[in-house]
Image (cartoon, rainbow, N blue to C red):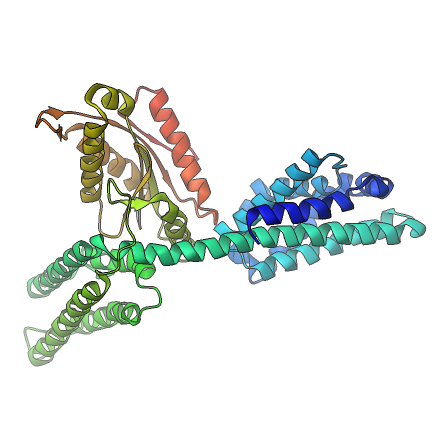
Length: 462
């Protein structure tokens, strides 16, 4: 079922449920249920917070500050008299949006159904206590029909998004495995060799301070594997090998740390160093072989800038949000807009405008790590997803990007040089399961940056 079919099917179904024939029963339900909506919402979340599966998506703070209020409003909306087709469509669209949110946070459908059963139980208790026996049966039949239809609508919307997201995820893997892969893998091979050199240097100097020791997890290779490779290589056997390498390398290093490698353990030390070198060599070979195999696959990027297309943002941010919630490694978003780009186009022509966008995209790509993402969001708007950063780093990274663009001379077709500036809105993931909040927060910050004169960075106040 597509979105149009979804709307047509449920318009008819909801119109029947909210038909004038049910007006008296709906009015009675509204009279008894709406005043208790907040109580029902509290009862609902009390049960959900005790469920071992739902606590992954809920916190007491989130429930108290946001979800109880929205759930109360949602319950009240079930019993409004949706008399016109516009009323029905507005109600339908609200349920579709709930399904979209569930898909964005990857909320299991089974958990949604469990929640609806919980809600039915809480509402049934009130109906049995507040409505006289002769009218209870009609009330229960109608409320069950409304909740069942609403649940089905939410789940249908959810499934449409999930299917689309999986298709986009597959397209994303094809997309990123073309032109950029060889470049990324070359940087990763260099990164691994540099990491090995740093490790050996630390051991020989006996500077094994844990705070400064170069861990594989936080090397360029480790960041790339966690935040990008896990998406690109999904379903490929190479991914498991590379993930295993992280663990094996750490295990070897832990063993080396325990040795007196300048004394009686020298032979064992040398053997472990050989083992580590062999592991790195194997991974470098795998990276090269995988790149060679995948380079023929090319489904195209943004035709002008060769950056990722915005259609893949949901795939990336869903993955980053999952990492953030499960591991505590938060990500940041930089929403970037080229200042007065229309004026540049008008003054220098669209061909030169395209040249500026190409150079701009290249500079952005060079300013980030291999584990980060750069998207062309549309027109002169760009989005950078910064993996595994601290909140304290966000402003300095954003300012670095702003200053880079301000200090860059952009070459036009006639070889003349011009300058450009950007406004940047920055936001860090707040551990909420809906990644759209982070983009919205960055968008609001960008709007403030423009209001305050442009060529500046604003950090989200959220």
